Amino acid sequence: MQSALQSLRQEVSAPGLYLDDPADFAGFATDWTRKFSGQPSLVARPRSTEEVAALLAACQRHRIPVVPQGGNTGMVGGSVPRGGEVVISLSRMNRIEALDKVAGTVQVQAGVVLQQLNDALAADHLFFPVDLGGRGSCQIGGMIATNAGGLRVLRYGHVRDSLRGIEAVLADGTVVSNLNKLKKNNTGLDLKHLFVGSEGILGIITRAVFEIVPKPPSVETALLALTDRKQLPDLLQAARAAFRGLSSLEFVVRPAVDLLREVDPAVREPFDKVYPLYAVIEEETGTGPVAREEFAERLEALTQNGIIADAIVAESEAQTRELWGYRERPPEAITKTGLTHKFDVTVPQGEIPKFLDDVERLASRFPGFRIFLYGHLGDGNVHVNVVQGKMLAREAFYAAEKELSDEIYGQVSALAGSISAEHGIGIMKRDYLGHSRSAAEIAMMRRIKNALDPLGIMNPGVIFAAQK
Ligand code: FAD
Ligand code: 2HG
Ligand code: ZN
Image (cartoon, rainbow, N blue to C red; front, side, top):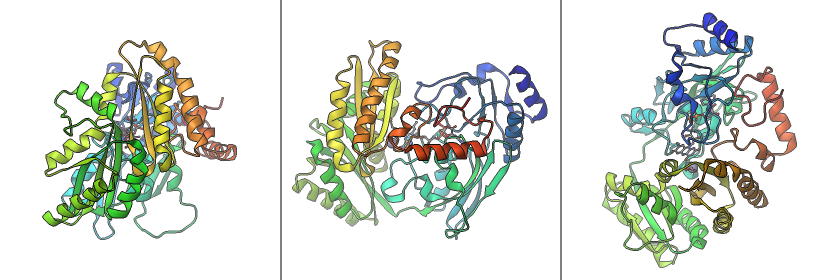
């Protein structure tokens, strides 16, 4: 391997392309969850598509396995090495290249960070509507490779739904470029969709064109208190009917709020009473006090119908951020608390209350673990976090993974749900792919992988086990 790496460095070189000191590898070796880590044999940080192409062609020639890495915020172990692979980080390919205000599109390099994109678009009162808590670090390429969802899927869909064009480099260095801006373009197989959700196993995404939208004139936000989780399906149905500009509907079960307050004592008790469950609702509205009053009236109707017990309407930007914090900040608080078994699943929305009961009952069988539940109510997407308590040893934490996974994915399958709503398969869920995809589908995925990456150098072991 050392001689192959030497050949790679001789054949492909540019100033600053490689990190030379393994002491600088730390940020590329461990992912955001801290659960997955592995030492890279080398870290390369190309600046252009041509450099990516040269790197991959040389890696294929010398049979060097590669892990593409974006912001390293992925949650299923696909963004860090497992066995000394070369990490190709897109972080230096971070240019916003072209804004077409008439077409309503933006072309970016894959290493552009989500927040960077939206900050730039804000000057023109435009925005890219896929939004998620990792916005300060996650990159466009990583978001495409995981088909990220997030907080506004119920109005704007996943990354896939905004994607117009793509450029990617295949394992042999071939650049496949279709930076299409057109809304209508039915000209044979739509190859960009192959890369959406491909998690780095087919090639490296280097550029993309997205549809962008005008920023709504105003957005109203409220935190809702519920007394019974059985009300969640009613809340969803009523919110869809009454809030015509509904752009987010999220839930969080009380222990996650307790954890926030434990980790950060500055977090306030939101209501004058403790409730077992909260929701965040966001609606795009017209501007002015009347719009806010009407929003509050719609919330009042939910109270009258007995669906919610109380509500706080945000009256400033700072309060909006504070209310969103009850839903957005638990993932970070959890990472600070301990190692976590994360389950990102979809169940039919009507089944959410029973599913929450069932996973809590399951977790209670595992002493020393804590369970935190929150998610995207509008999409039936539940995030189950089973977290290592202070007294639980690392080995005992990892030992529980199989039983928890078997049980939870078994429950999800029984409900005809999905074992991965939005984070992908990575290495974490590959043994369970068959719970959500048929044998014929998995075989077809493998055929596509073999056709585009015959030597298996691209992110080996991700989505399915590497073939010997
Ligand atoms: P990475 O983590 O670096 O990589 C993810 C995968 O994509 C890996 O398999 C990697 O090999 C591959 N990859 C990365 N870049 C490329 C490329 N250019 N070409 C080919 N393959 C590539 N996700 C949601 O869907 N919804 C959420 O609400 C959400 N909230 C989050 C909140 C927080 C606080 C955090 C930390 C993460 C959250 N995520 C969420 C996880 C989500 O998967 C990522 O944030 C994002 O989609 C991954 O982007 P990244 O650039 O960090 O990719
Ligand atoms: C979210 O929706 C993210 O907050 C993270 O997808 C999910 O922490 C998690 O399990
Ligand atoms: Zn999520």
